[in-house]
Image 1 (tube, rainbow over the protein chains, first blue to last red):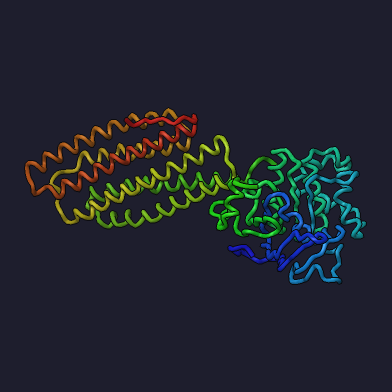
Image 2: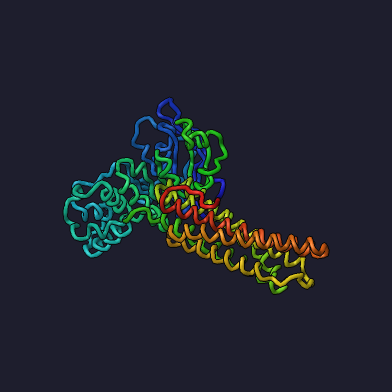
Length: 257
Length: 219
């Protein structure tokens, strides 16, 4: 839990260790995430921040030789329990990646994809979901007149917001973002950062970023990872002005990393 | 989506806090002089009490400025705006302290008939209050022309201060029983003179905000 808890927490990782074969990548991670806030995970390359993020919807299951100890609970349910429905988990905990990855289909079909594979066929209902998801992703006004054109025709920033809209269409509760703006120009980055401020009103957002300034601008809480450990976790406003740990100070002031 | 809406909203809040503080300071100056002229110790107490609110706003604004610098990477006019606010809150806070000094003089003179009629001190107060009002106006409107005018107006305040000073020294030399009161009036005149200087500082920072140039307008 961050040093300054403000609200309800929905995700709890405790005593989490992760090994790639014989190499330990995460060491005894204890982190709880605040509902309806943006939490940033920062740290130098290889510090374990993305590895940790991928634990939260079991994306690491796809990697051979990964062993995980400890537990992650969402609403007190251990997501690593053998009976966990992984499809349901990934619906509830959506993910946005570094590069926008729209499917090679129309804007409309990208958004409708999730609801369709979950069995929805009603056209009217799908229309509604497409509109509301694009609204929430702050993309509706830019694309409403070309919903049936290929998504690949959108700009990078628009594509990334489309992907966010695609995540929202299946009504997740938690959204994970892995460096969502690192392939975007500054204007598109600003639009995604602004979107975060809207999204947190309805969702819990956890974002990995190698851009410290982005963490400072857009998050409410920040966790600083180093060598697979959490060095410091607290309110962003505090951590970036008066960090408690010297290693945090050294990293955010550019003295190493 | 357009630009950095969240950040600019925070900047707007900073701006409104500063204006709120400005109007409280204007009021404090006005009421402190009024309390002296009208022998109103209740009013003087009130000015002293209200200073806590001004101090609290000062701290909040300073904290918000540092927060914005640390978290939002302000650039160009945004950075100059925050730098300007960070500097002028200090001047505003000092002006409020000067108003407290004046109010304390009112309290020390409680129940005493004044050795002279107060004519020049209210005149000086009118001039400095106008300078403060103009300084806040030129901040709001980024009006550099007005900023230069404020610096000129400060000369009239300085001139009056010298006259008051000389007159009070003369009164004290003639009659040593006036020393206690006359020194209080000197404190008051000195406080008003300082308020004028702080208003000029505000004007200098407005010029910096608009042009990016730092200039010394007070000699």
